[in-house]
Image 1 (cartoon, rainbow, N blue to C red):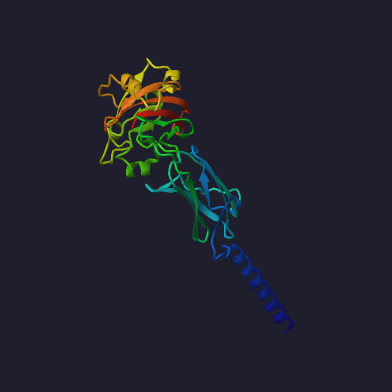
Image 2: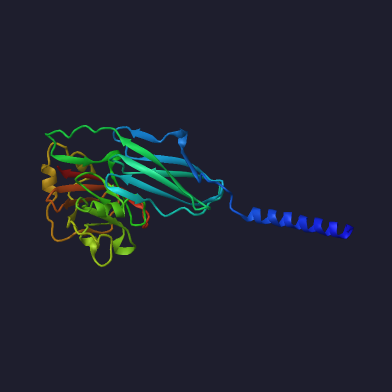
Length: 300
């Protein structure tokens, strides 16, 4: 009898230990899923006039442990995932997200989506509002996209956006560019050798299986480098007179791409809508994940 009691106690102890072991292997119960909060508990901001970028800061916590985090940029043009899903975490229970959004020229929503180990997904939005811009005076003949609103055209592996619309100054990532293909005049491309730091028209970038091959509208912008205009003279071109643009944006042939651009280069372009413009390269970072910064002056 004593032996049986001792044996039963041993079996019970093993059962309890085994139960504890398997319980410890189970995923943490967390019916609420990941929690996302933005810096200072704010969910929106309004940019001052002329400001086109903002850093979004979010803290993402999960009792069960994070599986992945995705970030999307949402605007009137549509929704676009920024970069790839984040799946590696130093701390599976807490992740601090920092994301700098550039080229903001309209109401933009950043959506942060988090999925935990229990496959529960939650998302939170951060809204970036734009201060109302002054109307363009009727006397202006030239649109300026310059200074803090200079176009940041990301190369093909960058999340900054690769396509530029000279009529609005907007920069689009690949999927949003397709949605707004009728507006896109230029696509930035970076490769080694002859293709380093290049500007393509959508038509030129559509050859084979390249960027805009599936677009139905492929604007055929023409380009030519300008060597008879200094950066100082470019800066002096006024908004009220397009005479210098007309004088310098000439000599176009069938060239719809430019290669090996560098800082200080000035090039002219003629859009599919027959608008003439000049652009100056003010900054350039190499590699396919880099960006080019251009200041643009184009006929209204």
